[in-house]
Amino acid sequence: MKATDFLRLRKATAISYALLFTLAIAAFAAGILHRPDGFESADTPSYIRASYRLMAGEIDALRTPVYPFIIALVRSLAGTELLNRSIVILQCGVYLLSAFFLMLTLRNLKVNQWITLIATAIYALFPGFYIFCFILNTEAFAQSFVVFFGWSMLRDAGRTPRISSALLSGTWLFILIFLRPAMICLIPVYIIYWAALYFKFRRGALKSCAAALCCLLMLGVAISCYKGAVKAKCGVSTISVVAAVNNYYLVRETKILRPHHTGNPAFQAMLHERADSIIITDEGWVDFHEAEYLLATLRVPPADVSDAVNAAIKENPGACLRLMPVRFRRACCSYTVLPVPPRIAPYFPMRMLWYWLLMGASLVWLILRRSSMQLWVLWLTSAAISACAILGAMNDWCRLSLPAMSMALMLAAVICSRIKAKLCG
Image 1 (cartoon, rainbow, N blue to C red):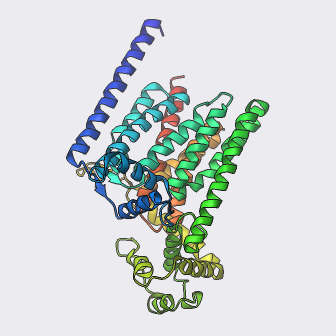
Image 2: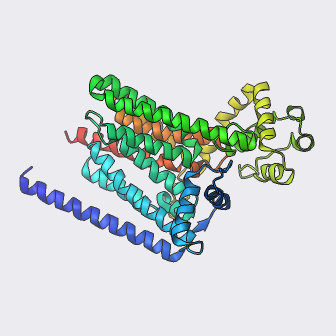
Image 3: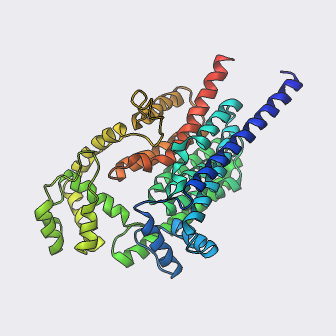
């Protein structure tokens, strides 16, 4: 390729990205103008309550502190009346920034520039990815922060890792876990990646890996201290009582939770009445009213619920394991968050099965190609988030798997770029 051809190509790419981000800004602006205060989810009130408790110096046993802190900070700057609107604008701005870092990550991985442009356009412009920016919940920040986490891990792809990369990725891991506790599933990914870098670069990566180890130790101390504070407050050894609620529905779905597993009279009476009832609706969703009735109406302490659940699992350890394939099958049959036009929806149903087929095919490709650890980070991060959502939550797996989709998109872009290079080689 001549130098003039290369310059024209670079100029065309720059113009394409300028147009792309202009369209993305226009789309977000239109969404904000159409619904300036966004949408409140069922979880929004609990996050707002947690933000007030955080400002009073208290921890909230239900909600980890990152999103409540953001709410409190925005409220102190914009006021209560403009709170929802300001959070929506902030979520949109951070998401647009994450689209830029998704582009940088793909460029670091040497993905073809036009495939990089297409992947960035899908992430920035496809409503299924950015729709949660207009909902007051953790999804928007979770998706954006996972992109930042991936960028910080892969910014030195192919080179000796810098200490700053270890510190940045450790910081984003900390933020993600205290934004959404399920992100604790990323700790093994972090450990595997930095261990692999140590064995690859040895002394060259010693300081960076030591910094990563320090981040892990500090994270472990923070999680232990926070769990201790939650246990002192409500008697449950966890960083969020949501885990106890999820586990409650797990054992209720298997029907192994019986009255003898608890000594709480009100809880026992409810189980005598409902232990054999079905909590899955005709649409395949869990009836969430039962936990609300248990905790809010009967005022059963979360510690009693957790103790009963643990006793049931200990008595019947295989029942919950047998439920996992059932959940996986139901999750694969559910629709993804990636919408398609109504006219073609009957002919092009986007289900979670498509995502797992992509993950399965990419796994085979990674193994056969003996791919670098950088590409495995994309697969492991995406798989960990989605699998954790399916194994740990009752349903709504598509929403909870949303942060995994950006990593899957980048992985697909890498594979397409490698195949293109081989075919055109």
